[in-house]
Figure 1 (tube, rainbow, N blue to C red):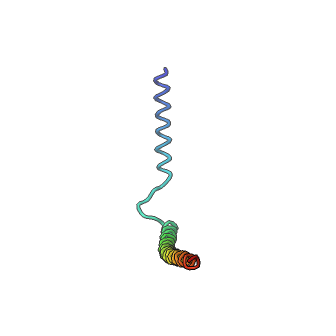
Figure 2: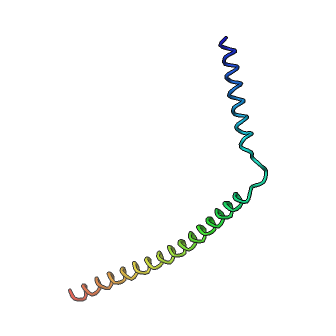
Figure 3: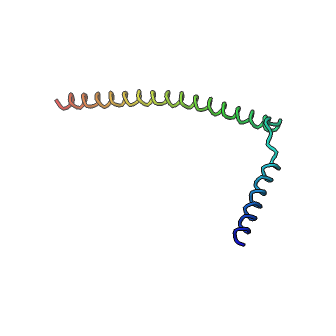
Length: 89
């Protein structure tokens, strides 16, 4: 009796799964709304990529400025030490 009950239950679950897929109605071709959503996503991705490139260029520029300022600071410290030594003599 249990085997028959399990078999019927399994059959009903399988039938439910198959019927669910048949109601979804998948097609080979996207509709206009899906194409529009795809185009919007594509445009958003392209905009994000261009923003990323812009930010990378800005980061590179700022890092070079930072390195230049660090060099200027080191030069100023070196000159300060030289002046202190000359004043001490």
